[in-house]
Every structure is written in C-alpha cells, then in structure tokens.
Length: 412
Image (tube, rainbow, N blue to C red; front, top):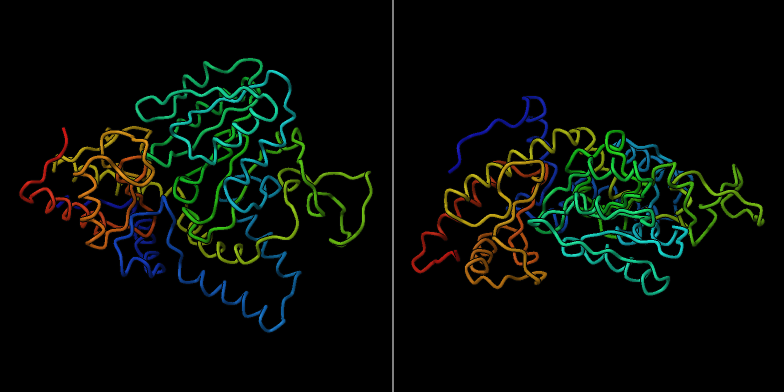
C-alpha cells in the first residue's frame, strides 16, 4: 500500500475530506468515473424535488426562476473568472460548440485546425459538416504521444485560419493540453481558440483572466456534479461581438426592461456577450440541480480541488508502477490532470480493449465495486473532490491481488 500523503494545507484538506460526506454515492461504490459522469451531492436532489413540488402545487414563481438562472450564471462565471455576460446556458457541450461554429462569418478558403484522434466526436462533426456545407478546410493533425500537438497546431495556423479547437483535457487518455501557450499564440494571430472543457471544469483551476481562451463549452454532468441536459458556453466579450448567432429568440435580443413576450421589430440589438446565444426558456430544473454542486466547488476552490486530485493521481500512479502495470504518459509534468490511464496504447475502440489482460483487470475492478470505464482501449480512472486515499489504495490493493493470480500476463 502506498505511504501516507499530505492533502494540501490543513484547512483545504480538511474541507475536502468533509465534503465527501455530501455525496452518498461514495458509500456504496469506489467511484472513479467522473470522466463519464460526476456524483451529485445529496442537496441537489432536495433542490430538484423542491422545483418539482412547486410545479405540482401550481406555485411556480417565474421571477424567482429567473433569479435562479442569474445566480447560477454568476456563480459559474466567478468559478472560471469570467463576466456573467460571457456565459450562455446550453443543453450540452455539443450545442455550445455548434453555436460557435455556426456563428462564424465563414469566407472562402477559411480553415479550422484540430486533432481528431483525441477529440470526442462532438468536436469533430461540426467541422466536417462545415466542410461539406460551406467548403471550410478542416486541417486534421496527428497526436504527439497521446497529447494534443500544440506546437504543430501553432505551426499550421495561417492567414485563413479562423478557429483552432481542442479539449482542455482529452477524454482519453485524459491528458491536459498546454492551453496557455496555445491561447496566447491564437491571440497573437487573431484566431479563435474554441475549447471543449467537459473533462476539466469543476476539477481543475481554469482561469479566464490568466488564460485567454476565446470560447469554451462545458456540460454539467461531469465535473460540475449535476445532470445531463444542461451546459454552459463561455465566449469572451470581444469575440462574442464578432459572432452572428444563426437563431434568435426573446432572450437573444436586448429589449431592456420589456416583458419577455413583448413584440419587437427588425431594428433590434443583440444581447451583450454570450447571452445572444440563448434561445427560449431555460432548463430551470437543470439549473436547480447544478447550483448545490457549484456552491461546494466554489467553497472549496478549484485550486484546492486540483491539488487534491493531482496528489491522488500521483499516489495511484506510484502504486500501480510498483506492480508493473502499463500506464500511459505516467511521467510527471504539466500534462497530468485528474485521470490515470492504465494501458500502453490508444486504440480505436470506444469502450473495450483488445488486450485480454486489461479486459480481465477491468472486470476484476467491476466485480469488486470499483466504478471506472474503458475508453479508446485504456482503463480510465478519473478523480474528483469526493475521492480520497482509501479509494486509491483500494484500487492498488485489487490490482495487486489481480497481478498475483496464476496465469496473469501483462502484455509487454
């Protein structure tokens, strides 16, 4: 078993350990699958139940529902160090990415740059669609040892490049992109950097004051500890003013203090910032569900959460290395995030591996109540604030027992 480690400073460490009690899901499972979906705090159920009860009893107050939306908008904007006007509500990551892709005033010969083997399909099809519809050139670059090829992306930028897009943390193998370098180079070239941060927000310390990302799409069911069906789109104000939403509704248009149902004319002004992308009424239930998780994350701070998960991932990597298990990009560095990839190669499969030993190890974990996933041929262990040393040590102990079985053979 790995040796004890210090969890940040005493105050932050104790707060994180206490926060674990707010997540009933950790009582029944060793839950290491935040990369698929995060556990929800118990308070989220109370918030959702309250909303449903108000509907059942006919006591809905829409003004208070809008107050909820603005509270959540402001809390999320504060979390990533943005302005509330730079945040739009969406239904998921895909919608946010497509909103931006369809709002660019594309010109003949324009191009977009990405690394397809490391992107979720949600960040591939919008660009292939533009290629088919408008003739946009899609420049597909290969990965560099499982990492987003930042230097190659920068080198591929030319005067016709409109967008560079990538994941903050790849969904497999779960490595962090050098976002600061990429963002600064895009700013210098007046190119939009559009980021899929589904695997980073709420867990890593993402700061828009520090890193000049142009636009970023997230969903709430992973690191933000809530439900499917809601997300946030961040668009930096100076970029939002250059975009033209393909769809409009009352909430996209600035009508001042007029009622939401007030009529308009063709002499309208778009809402400031990312608000111009909002179409129709909001997912009020999704907003109620995410608010408790946002409060917990904000109270702990993403800096403390990032420190916590990085220490746990380091502990896990060290323990598995002692056993001789293959680990992807296990060396220390800025590429590390909250995921540990067990396996030595990225494969074409989504949720399986062609390595019988790794499939056997996955089944052993599952049989022993350890929840994780296989993505692109590797076992993906993903951590959040509710995980602790005991979770990590249990994984190491189960792996140790598996390694000791007669006939177990790890592929060289």
